[in-house]
Image (cartoon, rainbow, N blue to C red; front, side, top):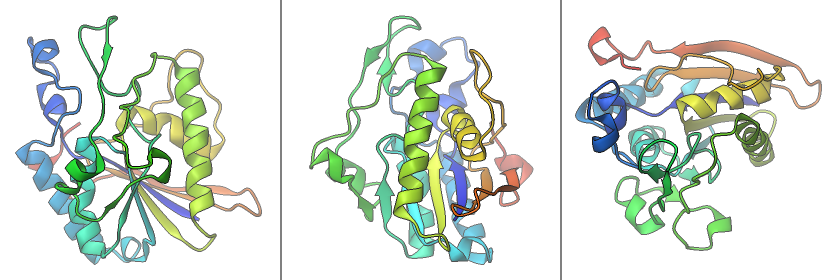
Amino acid sequence: MDLLLIRHAQSLNNHLTGALDYAVRRQADPPLTELGRQQASRLASWAARDPFCQRITHLHTSLTTRAVQTTAPLAQTLGLNVHGLVEAYECGGLNTGLEGGFTPVMGRDHVSLLADCPVLVWPEELHGQAWGGGCEPWDHAGFAKRAVSVGRHLRKAADEADVVALITHHDFAQHLIAELLGLPALPGKALTFRLNNTATAHLELNADSGARAVHWINRTCHLTPDHLTL
């Protein structure tokens, strides 16, 4: 199985990073900025021309607003449905409040997210309910455990010859890459693989032999310098 990990495009919170009033203006489930929408569009245009992306057979996404909005133009370009993946959200989940006192926030429901991505397939385990938002303690062991579950789900949903794409998040991707490549976890912190907004990482996983290969990490060839953001 080949896996293409894709970080979501620039969100409102990404844009606000470093601002003095960040804690006040951040949103629990932020949408994409206008620049983020341009990044998502460029990602889709690149995928339409890229021989590897043209082979994508399965498209999955985190259920956050920014991930679903990033996925929508890619799904339209590839002519694929998008399968929501409950556990692929960012570390910490959706929350509001000051650091150290976060309050859980519910995610959106299927009908609401269909407005952003009309081909979004809702996870069966939610049984028509809204996504709970995934608010969780900031615990790297817990993130790593969730990465194991996501990796298992991706392998189960695809055959050996398939190419799977997942739109996910920067911090959680650290744990997912480590899990898929069999890398040791660092005590108390995540492995650090920089992923810019809409950057891609191509991993090759052979279930029979156990072989793993990294073809690239943090590829942003679809972005101009003006569109490149962290």
